[in-house]
Image (cartoon, rainbow, N blue to C red):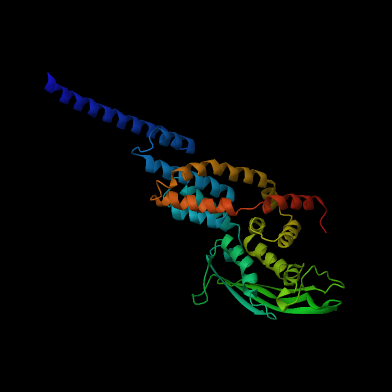
Length: 354
């Protein structure tokens, strides 16, 4: 009888494994039926090394990414989702929304997917001026779904020509002569491969103030210290005309997105003023939904925590790793400019138009 113990143990082991596999498959079926982050998390908690553990992580990544993309509602986010999950369960929904966003544009820009920025600048000793002009223009074009081409690349669908001339204005004070004023002028023009041409002239000026205060160090000593940004941000100057063209080409949706990307409050005020003048019902509704937008964004964070818990042991899963890194960078880099300025704009809209 002693020898029969081994077959009995083997049979018991086989039965145990079989039951384990059955439970694994059964619980995975429950997770798939629910198709929710909580459902897949429950499966992972029960079967952390189960047969479908990797698939559960991918599903959590896709659902989390989809939830975030839906609330961001931006073309580059949707494109990034499709790049990561081209055959995901939500991919068709994302593609349909992309078609809707492209259809809101002017007919000449609906099929545009590539763009190029050409800067012709003449500033007195302002070596970093190209970056200042291109940074906001790049943000606009990228959020409109444009792939930016380099100088050596072929013909783009959209070409943005920026021509600016700048002159520092100096004045004499008790403590010396300083470049405390600035004057800029130029044009912003857009050409498309479909024949559209839109050109705006601009001019902005900051006169030197009668007095300046110096606290322990000299200000406006160099030409580069002149108030260039102030001159460029004046109504009727560069940024104002750039946003006019943005609204004309891509719609006010892009201007609302810009509010969440602004690094400077003074420039956010230029965007705010432009949106307030439009008074478009669709835009107003979009602004009113910003609170829901932010609540939706925050709802992504707990799901992101689930992925983060698993990312070090499961980093080989490219979909999960890419999603975690992409969303992590968003969470760290996002600011509340949009939320703050939405309130200001809605207050502006209550006033009669000028």
